[in-house]
Length: 90
Image 1 (cartoon, rainbow, N blue to C red):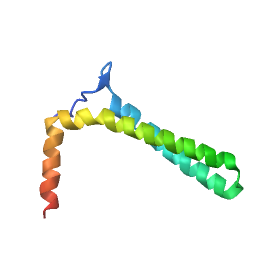
Image 2: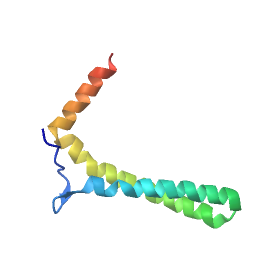
Image 3: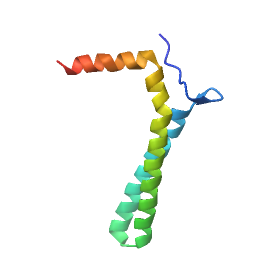
Image 4: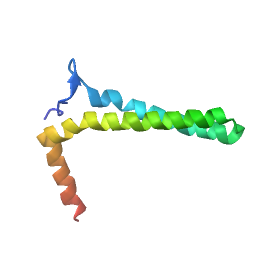
């Protein structure tokens, strides 16, 4: 059985996996800025954390939107959701 093919792609490369690292990096950088602000009390770090958090939320939303066609369009992915739902009943 082959892996599901992504329906949202650019030149054959799926968009969703390309976007996933950005929110992760932004959220980790937000945490680092918060820790540095906690240690130094320099307001610049708090400002950077707010901007990084906003960028992380926006990129997470874009990644979710790019992955939505894959979840809704691939029958094998939907079939896996039904299997998981059946297993939760036990």
